[in-house]
Length: 510
Ligand code: ARG
Image (tube, rainbow, N blue to C red; front, top):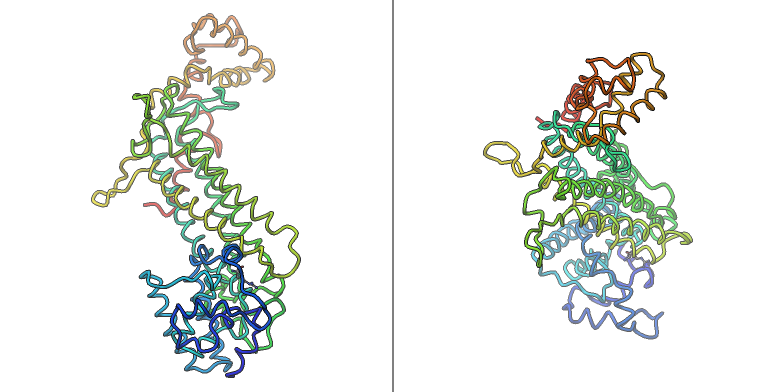
């Protein structure tokens, strides 16, 4: 067993070159010097520029927890299979515990010379526990190691993001619940179309985010599969128990069945799971961006439908009257950034032959930035819309403020009930197309008089069609218009209340 680690070639494991011959007795300075001493295969050291160009440790050190978790699962299995000794595993565990502590407390010395997070952790392990550390990489390659690390890390982030996405939905539902009877103009083509409940409008976003959550859950299933055991590209000669590793790392389905990548070449090389995640993240951002656009419009003076708390706005350095919606504007802007990462990752994959290529090291920064941008955006939006829950009272405080009067006035101004008049005439026997034409004439005349349809005299309305009776004013009212749309998915308060109840159950809201 002792000799096993040594059969890894120098090319596969620069760490062996970097830390030879007796790492346990070397200081980190010596490590630096030694790292120049590449294996017999190399006749010159790497230039500083190339070192900087190829190293990833500055950013992939973020994967350290996943790296250690993956290594421990691998080492535990190696010991269980008798490939390394139980005492080796015990030392690896102790070493990793110390390393985790060093990283957490900021004393760990990350070295560019050691390229990436994997080699940094492994070198430190070997310096702490000697040969046991050198045995860790038995039956493993950085190729299946990094693919495992990214998947483990991303799985945790997906779970965190799913929680944040649920919080944003709860915030929207909470605001919706208080505004079922608030009427605003619904738009098509950004022209006043028909009145809708403000709650109904907000619930449209809850539906979008609910689908986004489904997408995340679906991506998670494919992220949660184990590449480890694929080694560099072809599998390994050691009798590994991959299912055991998968179980240790909780890479199992709902029934507890271990989820393994089934082809070693595919396992080490494809990053489609990262692309899929970034696509799902892009859609979330697109939905946030649409909401942002509406918030920006609604809080402009011309609409004045809502206000958002001052802490989400900024002033102008020159115009004292201004309160700018920087947060929604930035979210709209950052959507481009996340969609850009999707383009970056999908282009990164295109044209790569099997199996692993160093191109894949470029998957990390876009992935990290996607997660960070999305997490911050979701958190800030949940608070901006729904406010914060006061721990003393359990009530939400400080979300958006709704100006129901301005919404209603805008709906009343835009002939939003014209369709209702047409439907009224249809119910009195007129074919819909004819009714549409009659109402167009009526609206034109109302516009000329500068009044709403509901403000016209009955006699004036009857001039357009004799079937119009006094009961017409019920359908011309905004509330009547809303109440009439009482089919599933419609804006009638009864429907909206039912949807709120459904969403509250879905989101486990009290
Ligand atoms: N830092 C590398 C990455 O992120 C790790 C894998 C390196 N493998 C290799 N054969 N050079 O992809």
